[in-house]
Image (cartoon, rainbow, N blue to C red):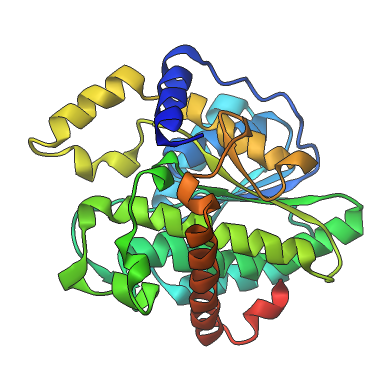
Length: 332
């Protein structure tokens, strides 16, 4: 399927398709959802509580907003003692490392991690050693993934089941030309303000996340470490969430708002894509999920150029992650 086919499929799914209501129970499971104080993450967490999860951890930057989300879930689902609020700020590596340590030391089991948190901005800002979109959507996302892997594996072995690690990607990985890949170092290039194309940066970050996911998933499937972790990257589609709040301001925001009203899914419906991925069906392992089924990676991702870029990016990313947390790559 080329780019034209992808856009036709996009329009069809958003105008004519209603995503299926989740019914698979998560009885007894412990689930972490990042970016869960609002939008997709909040509604996914609400579903997990409704579907009988034993423990649902809202991993959020603001504890105050997280507690508001917790109260909302408890009020709608009539269950207390299930939802917890843990601090996680993906713009700070130390916060991610502290969260990983808390998972390791405080959880008896960890069945599912939904890496949903992300940032979309039109303003230049640095976080740690890169532009904030890359730090949050790429570097810290995989820092967290590698930090929680041991507990996921441990759970798989202890309870004789597959654990699940899924990432919220996006169909926008289809639509960027990603010129940053031509630089000697991709991560160094994205840290340069003078070359930044912020109008395209979110798209670039989602393509980078997708490429890194592919290599990460392949490495995981080849690993001899005990325990089985099903991984996937999902496309929630166009959803009206707070992620879009900044880019809907000003004149250019007017057509975007109209577009959202015409084709945008509600967070409630869009979150079904996260819950579907969290089930961890074997056929979803290493796959791109679209409309709650296995979809297709972009033409570039599947091309020889894409595969070579994927491997280059992974080498750079692992080098950075090792600098942040020495020895972390052994978790794979």
